[in-house]
Length: 280
Image 1: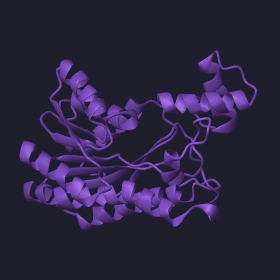
Image 2: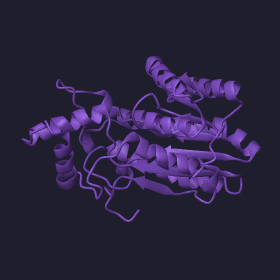
Image 3: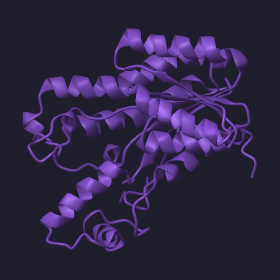
Image 4: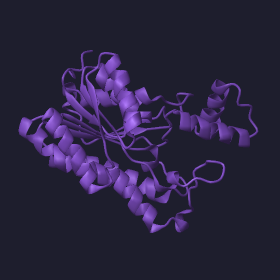
Protein backbone atom coordinates (compact mmCIF):
# COMPACT_ATOMS: atom_id res chain seq x y z
CA UNK A 1 0.00 0.00 0.00
CA UNK A 2 1.24 3.48 -0.87
CA UNK A 3 0.84 5.58 2.27
CA UNK A 4 1.15 8.78 0.19
CA UNK A 5 3.91 10.15 2.41
CA UNK A 6 6.21 11.14 -0.44
CA UNK A 7 7.37 14.72 0.20
CA UNK A 8 5.45 15.13 3.45
CA UNK A 9 7.54 17.07 5.98
CA UNK A 10 7.92 15.36 9.34
CA UNK A 11 9.56 16.32 12.63
CA UNK A 12 10.23 13.39 14.96
CA UNK A 13 11.38 14.63 18.35
CA UNK A 14 13.84 12.55 20.34
CA UNK A 15 14.77 10.61 17.20
CA UNK A 16 18.53 10.31 17.66
CA UNK A 17 18.05 6.85 19.23
CA UNK A 18 15.51 4.24 20.33
CA UNK A 19 11.84 4.48 19.39
CA UNK A 20 12.25 7.91 17.82
CA UNK A 21 14.99 6.66 15.53
CA UNK A 22 12.79 3.75 14.47
CA UNK A 23 9.96 6.16 13.65
CA UNK A 24 12.28 8.43 11.67
CA UNK A 25 13.60 5.49 9.65
CA UNK A 26 10.15 4.23 8.66
CA UNK A 27 8.86 7.68 7.69
CA UNK A 28 12.00 8.46 5.70
CA UNK A 29 11.84 5.16 3.82
CA UNK A 30 8.21 5.93 2.96
CA UNK A 31 9.40 9.10 1.25
CA UNK A 32 8.78 11.72 3.92
CA UNK A 33 11.20 14.61 4.37
CA UNK A 34 12.30 13.91 7.91
CA UNK A 35 13.88 16.18 10.51
CA UNK A 36 15.77 14.18 13.14
CA UNK A 37 15.85 15.83 16.56
CA UNK A 38 17.67 15.34 19.82
CA UNK A 39 19.86 17.03 22.39
CA UNK A 40 23.05 15.28 21.27
CA UNK A 41 24.33 16.69 17.98
CA UNK A 42 26.63 13.77 17.26
CA UNK A 43 23.85 11.21 17.56
CA UNK A 44 21.47 13.33 15.48
CA UNK A 45 24.07 13.71 12.76
CA UNK A 46 24.81 9.97 12.72
CA UNK A 47 21.13 9.06 12.28
CA UNK A 48 20.63 11.71 9.59
CA UNK A 49 23.76 10.69 7.69
CA UNK A 50 22.80 7.01 7.74
CA UNK A 51 19.37 7.79 6.32
CA UNK A 52 20.79 10.16 3.72
CA UNK A 53 23.24 7.45 2.63
CA UNK A 54 20.23 5.18 2.08
CA UNK A 55 18.73 7.74 -0.30
CA UNK A 56 16.33 9.42 2.11
CA UNK A 57 15.72 13.17 2.37
CA UNK A 58 16.65 14.09 5.90
CA UNK A 59 18.18 16.81 8.07
CA UNK A 60 18.56 17.31 11.80
CA UNK A 61 18.03 19.91 14.48
CA UNK A 62 19.33 20.06 18.05
CA UNK A 63 17.64 21.54 21.11
CA UNK A 64 16.20 20.98 24.57
CA UNK A 65 12.44 21.14 24.09
CA UNK A 66 11.79 21.53 27.82
CA UNK A 67 13.30 25.02 27.58
CA UNK A 68 10.91 27.52 26.01
CA UNK A 69 13.55 29.55 24.18
CA UNK A 70 15.35 26.47 22.87
CA UNK A 71 12.07 24.87 21.78
CA UNK A 72 11.02 28.01 19.91
CA UNK A 73 14.44 28.01 18.27
CA UNK A 74 13.97 24.44 17.06
CA UNK A 75 10.56 25.28 15.60
CA UNK A 76 11.85 28.47 13.96
CA UNK A 77 14.73 26.59 12.32
CA UNK A 78 12.34 24.05 10.85
CA UNK A 79 9.91 26.71 9.58
CA UNK A 80 12.79 28.60 7.97
CA UNK A 81 14.27 25.44 6.47
CA UNK A 82 11.10 23.69 5.25
CA UNK A 83 8.37 26.32 5.41
CA UNK A 84 6.59 24.32 8.10
CA UNK A 85 5.77 20.68 8.64
CA UNK A 86 2.92 18.31 7.86
CA UNK A 87 3.62 15.65 10.51
CA UNK A 88 4.61 16.26 14.12
CA UNK A 89 5.64 13.22 16.15
CA UNK A 90 6.06 14.13 19.82
CA UNK A 91 8.32 11.31 20.96
CA UNK A 92 10.80 13.17 23.19
CA UNK A 93 10.20 12.56 26.86
CA UNK A 94 11.71 10.64 29.74
CA UNK A 95 11.38 10.60 33.50
CA UNK A 96 13.41 12.28 36.19
CA UNK A 97 14.49 9.07 37.90
CA UNK A 98 16.20 7.86 34.71
CA UNK A 99 18.74 10.63 35.20
CA UNK A 100 19.73 9.40 38.64
CA UNK A 101 21.63 6.14 38.71
CA UNK A 102 22.97 4.03 41.52
CA UNK A 103 26.50 2.75 41.77
CA UNK A 104 25.66 -0.15 39.44
CA UNK A 105 24.28 2.08 36.73
CA UNK A 106 20.64 1.20 37.30
CA UNK A 107 17.86 3.76 37.40
CA UNK A 108 16.51 4.51 40.87
CA UNK A 109 12.74 4.95 41.04
CA UNK A 110 11.74 6.67 44.27
CA UNK A 111 8.71 5.46 46.19
CA UNK A 112 5.48 7.32 45.40
CA UNK A 113 5.42 9.23 48.70
CA UNK A 114 9.10 10.07 48.37
CA UNK A 115 9.01 11.37 44.80
CA UNK A 116 10.04 15.02 45.03
CA UNK A 117 7.95 17.73 43.38
CA UNK A 118 10.96 18.59 41.25
CA UNK A 119 10.59 15.16 39.60
CA UNK A 120 6.98 15.97 38.72
CA UNK A 121 7.84 19.30 37.14
CA UNK A 122 10.92 17.93 35.31
CA UNK A 123 9.00 15.02 33.80
CA UNK A 124 6.04 17.26 32.92
CA UNK A 125 8.28 19.68 31.02
CA UNK A 126 10.06 16.89 29.15
CA UNK A 127 6.82 15.27 28.00
CA UNK A 128 3.74 17.51 28.03
CA UNK A 129 5.61 20.81 28.02
CA UNK A 130 7.76 19.92 25.02
CA UNK A 131 4.76 18.64 23.05
CA UNK A 132 2.54 21.63 23.83
CA UNK A 133 5.19 24.16 22.83
CA UNK A 134 5.71 22.54 19.44
CA UNK A 135 1.99 22.12 18.85
CA UNK A 136 1.37 25.80 19.52
CA UNK A 137 4.23 26.82 17.21
CA UNK A 138 3.62 24.45 14.31
CA UNK A 139 -0.12 23.75 14.16
CA UNK A 140 -1.14 27.23 12.91
CA UNK A 141 0.75 26.48 9.68
CA UNK A 142 -1.00 23.14 9.39
CA UNK A 143 -4.38 24.88 9.74
CA UNK A 144 -3.50 27.36 7.00
CA UNK A 145 -2.63 24.47 4.65
CA UNK A 146 -5.64 22.37 5.66
CA UNK A 147 -3.62 19.27 6.50
CA UNK A 148 -1.66 17.96 9.47
CA UNK A 149 -0.91 14.92 11.54
CA UNK A 150 0.01 15.08 15.23
CA UNK A 151 1.10 11.82 16.84
CA UNK A 152 1.98 11.77 20.52
CA UNK A 153 3.98 8.82 21.83
CA UNK A 154 2.59 7.53 25.09
CA UNK A 155 3.42 4.60 27.32
CA UNK A 156 1.76 1.47 28.65
CA UNK A 157 2.24 3.13 32.05
CA UNK A 158 -0.51 5.60 31.13
CA UNK A 159 -3.30 3.03 31.33
CA UNK A 160 -1.82 0.08 33.23
CA UNK A 161 -0.20 1.44 36.34
CA UNK A 162 2.21 -0.21 38.74
CA UNK A 163 3.47 0.86 42.18
CA UNK A 164 5.68 3.96 42.19
CA UNK A 165 6.77 5.66 38.93
CA UNK A 166 4.33 8.22 40.30
CA UNK A 167 4.85 11.25 38.10
CA UNK A 168 5.72 9.35 34.91
CA UNK A 169 2.50 7.33 34.86
CA UNK A 170 0.32 10.36 35.56
CA UNK A 171 2.05 12.53 32.98
CA UNK A 172 1.88 9.89 30.26
CA UNK A 173 -1.84 9.60 31.00
CA UNK A 174 -2.04 13.35 30.48
CA UNK A 175 -0.56 12.88 26.99
CA UNK A 176 -3.41 10.53 26.06
CA UNK A 177 -5.99 12.97 27.40
CA UNK A 178 -4.30 15.88 25.62
CA UNK A 179 -4.44 14.08 22.28
CA UNK A 180 -8.17 13.44 22.58
CA UNK A 181 -8.87 17.03 23.63
CA UNK A 182 -6.79 18.55 20.84
CA UNK A 183 -8.44 16.29 18.25
CA UNK A 184 -11.80 17.82 19.16
CA UNK A 185 -10.35 21.33 19.13
CA UNK A 186 -9.00 20.77 15.62
CA UNK A 187 -12.17 19.16 14.25
CA UNK A 188 -12.82 19.77 10.54
CA UNK A 189 -9.41 21.43 9.98
CA UNK A 190 -7.79 18.50 8.14
CA UNK A 191 -5.57 17.84 11.16
CA UNK A 192 -5.79 14.60 13.10
CA UNK A 193 -4.35 13.93 16.56
CA UNK A 194 -3.65 10.49 18.00
CA UNK A 195 -1.56 8.72 20.62
CA UNK A 196 0.56 5.65 19.99
CA UNK A 197 1.24 3.60 23.12
CA UNK A 198 4.27 1.30 22.98
CA UNK A 199 4.77 -1.71 25.17
CA UNK A 200 8.32 -2.83 25.98
CA UNK A 201 10.49 -1.91 23.01
CA UNK A 202 14.00 -3.30 22.68
CA UNK A 203 17.04 -1.05 22.67
CA UNK A 204 20.59 -1.57 23.97
CA UNK A 205 19.61 0.10 27.26
CA UNK A 206 16.48 -2.05 27.64
CA UNK A 207 18.40 -5.23 26.86
CA UNK A 208 21.03 -4.30 29.46
CA UNK A 209 18.34 -3.64 32.07
CA UNK A 210 16.58 -6.94 31.41
CA UNK A 211 19.86 -8.83 31.42
CA UNK A 212 20.53 -7.48 34.91
CA UNK A 213 17.01 -8.46 36.00
CA UNK A 214 17.48 -11.95 34.56
CA UNK A 215 20.69 -12.41 36.51
CA UNK A 216 18.87 -11.40 39.70
CA UNK A 217 16.29 -14.09 38.90
CA UNK A 218 19.09 -16.63 38.62
CA UNK A 219 18.53 -17.17 34.90
CA UNK A 220 21.20 -17.94 32.33
CA UNK A 221 21.62 -14.97 29.98
CA UNK A 222 23.69 -16.52 27.17
CA UNK A 223 20.55 -17.23 25.09
CA UNK A 224 18.69 -13.92 24.72
CA UNK A 225 15.74 -15.56 22.94
CA UNK A 226 15.17 -17.74 26.00
CA UNK A 227 15.49 -14.73 28.34
CA UNK A 228 12.93 -12.86 26.25
CA UNK A 229 10.56 -15.85 26.25
CA UNK A 230 10.72 -16.15 30.04
CA UNK A 231 10.14 -12.45 30.62
CA UNK A 232 7.14 -12.28 28.28
CA UNK A 233 5.57 -15.43 29.72
CA UNK A 234 6.31 -14.92 33.43
CA UNK A 235 6.97 -11.28 34.36
CA UNK A 236 6.00 -8.77 31.66
CA UNK A 237 3.41 -11.04 30.09
CA UNK A 238 2.20 -10.34 26.57
CA UNK A 239 0.39 -12.32 23.90
CA UNK A 240 3.06 -11.94 21.22
CA UNK A 241 5.69 -13.79 23.26
CA UNK A 242 8.39 -11.26 22.42
CA UNK A 243 9.37 -7.65 22.94
CA UNK A 244 8.83 -5.02 20.27
CA UNK A 245 11.32 -3.25 18.03
CA UNK A 246 11.48 0.52 17.42
CA UNK A 247 10.25 0.11 13.86
CA UNK A 248 7.09 -1.62 15.13
CA UNK A 249 6.15 1.79 16.52
CA UNK A 250 7.35 3.45 13.34
CA UNK A 251 4.94 1.47 11.19
CA UNK A 252 1.94 2.51 13.28
CA UNK A 253 3.09 6.12 13.21
CA UNK A 254 3.48 5.96 9.42
CA UNK A 255 -0.11 4.76 9.06
CA UNK A 256 -1.45 7.54 11.29
CA UNK A 257 0.73 10.09 9.47
CA UNK A 258 -0.67 9.09 6.11
CA UNK A 259 -3.30 11.13 4.25
CA UNK A 260 -5.22 7.83 4.14
CA UNK A 261 -5.84 8.00 7.92
CA UNK A 262 -8.13 11.03 7.88
CA UNK A 263 -10.92 9.12 9.66
CA UNK A 264 -8.64 8.15 12.55
CA UNK A 265 -8.40 10.84 15.23
CA UNK A 266 -8.67 11.32 18.98
CA UNK A 267 -7.67 7.72 19.68
CA UNK A 268 -4.99 5.81 21.56
CA UNK A 269 -3.40 3.02 19.50
CA UNK A 270 -1.58 0.32 21.45
CA UNK A 271 1.48 -1.37 19.96
CA UNK A 272 2.36 -3.59 22.90
CA UNK A 273 2.08 -7.22 21.88
CA UNK A 274 -0.99 -7.53 24.08
CA UNK A 275 0.79 -6.40 27.24
CA UNK A 276 -1.93 -4.09 28.52
CA UNK A 277 -4.64 -6.13 30.19
CA UNK A 278 -7.56 -3.76 29.60
CA UNK A 279 -9.59 -3.64 26.40
CA UNK A 280 -8.17 -0.20 25.56
